[in-house]
Length: 109
Image 1 (cartoon, rainbow, N blue to C red):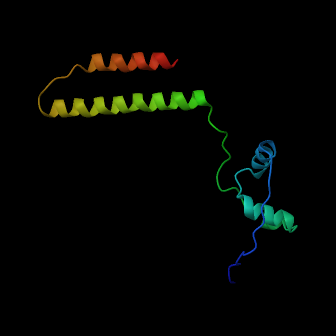
Image 2 (image 1 turned 60 degrees about the horizontal axis):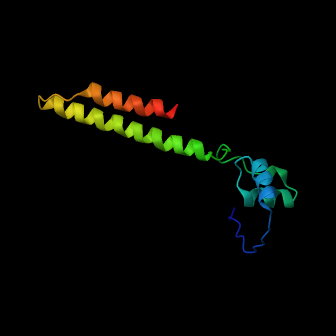
């Protein structure tokens, strides 16, 4: 069967509140095929969700995520430095660096 070629385009306008409501009802489904199926009355053609619906991240959560990523990056750098030092017979003060990371984590709480 040949794929359909959609050549007619129509636009729809929504208020931000309407779109938030509609987007929630889509539940991760794509807008165009879902709207097409509903408008044509073919509920069997409604596509399955493509991804789980996610709520937007709050500004606070976004900030904490960035800080946590930075702490993870620091841990990764410490692990690399420790491994390099161990291979070359050098010593580094891992405890001091871990305490600095711990202070950063306590600041998050």
